[in-house]
Image (cartoon, rainbow, N blue to C red):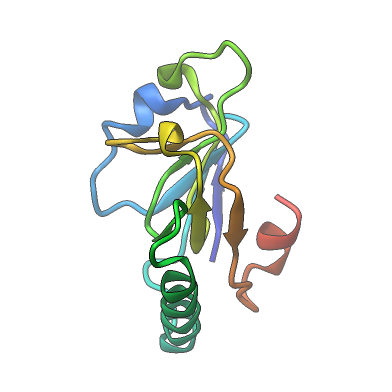
Length: 127
């Protein structure tokens, strides 16, 4: 279940200091806590799709990354430390190697997959 916390405005500057076990996304400066762990069915679908995409991309320039993998949606001219949109799609395909750094992907991936949960459809579809 998604828990929206609105006390403060968060950026990567605060996000990087969160506990490694905390699963959350920051969208427009608001923290959205994610469920503690995905269901076995979610993980089966994720594993299957990741495997198929990985096999398809073998020998090509694009790479596939399964969650958890941070995607920083920086605004034009914005420094990554000030990024207030950090998401973790279930699967991200990135073809531009310049977007990948030791923290994740800076900029929009070329393709993403989000496995929609029946418990947080509105977050997955809208937010």
